[in-house]
Length: 358
Ligand code: 57M
Image (cartoon, rainbow, N blue to C red):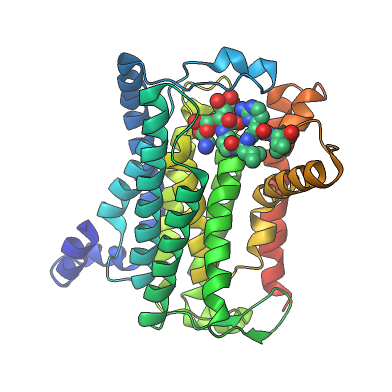
């Protein structure tokens, strides 16, 4: 909002002209979100402790998790609060891609909030039913698709890395495709969120990577030069991504091992859904498999485990999602986390490298 007040004043005060630049606003968004997240995180943890709103731990998981009982959860409240707080100062709300991303973020925030609240208030591990969650997630993704098409932002063709142009016109099938990306991403991040810092690390690297992609896709000359599809106003998502990185770093301050707070569904569903939406809006749905490779591996491990158990009555992993498998193999929790972060950084850089290979 501050952008909307200050930038018009650039006629009188030339210095305010700097607000025109996405790069400048992205840096400020990152800094503000980091500071907000650290300050609000501290207050939020104290509030949750006072209310005794702690995580209920399932007793069928790895034993090392039992000692985490009572750790405050729902940290997503201050992560999303910090993102939006920082955007109030730095965001250009005339950008439709930004508004659509915020719509998905808030809708999944509401879903996660009800789910977490039901669990902490009733002190059990059941929240909103799986069917209810999926219904809400798909309905939100459907509305997001409608908004994207109504404002003619992105078209319905499919782009893949290494190809100079679109490889397929999906037509109405793009609805199912984009919904799959958004809902899949939301749930995959949720599955990943099972060790201290395990989800927020790859969320930070993915948001940073998408920040670069969004900046390029929203810049006509750079997009043309790199042969990536140009999408009007999508550059503003670089500011959103920078705010996500900042808020994520602030959250990691508290969520790093041993965690003082978990993000809860309110964090994982909304951040995952937002990343999926950004992937669709920047036309990087396929490349998202690389950028968010950790989320993909975690989700695949669950799919494989469940199918194998149903079909053959045998497990492939000691326990799914795969981070539990490594824990049960005897790796210390911190080793699993840091190794997953390393893979995530490696994948993000690989994805960025594909930009020049078209
Ligand atoms: C949420 N949530 C954590 C925290 C976090 C289909 C099945 C694979 C689903 C899966 C599942 O329910 N996943 C979704 C995973 C939980 O964390 C809370 O949930 C929020 C995210 N939604 O923010 O509020 C626990 O994770 C640990 N944690 C940390 N640090 C963090 O920063 O240590 C979380 C964040 C926390 C804490 O212990 O309590 C969770 O795991 O519940 N189900 C599973 O993951 C279960 N797997 C399973 O049943 N596997 C079977 C299936 C696939 C056939 C198998 O392999 O045989 C496991 N989860 C648990 N225990 N807790 C198994 C048993």
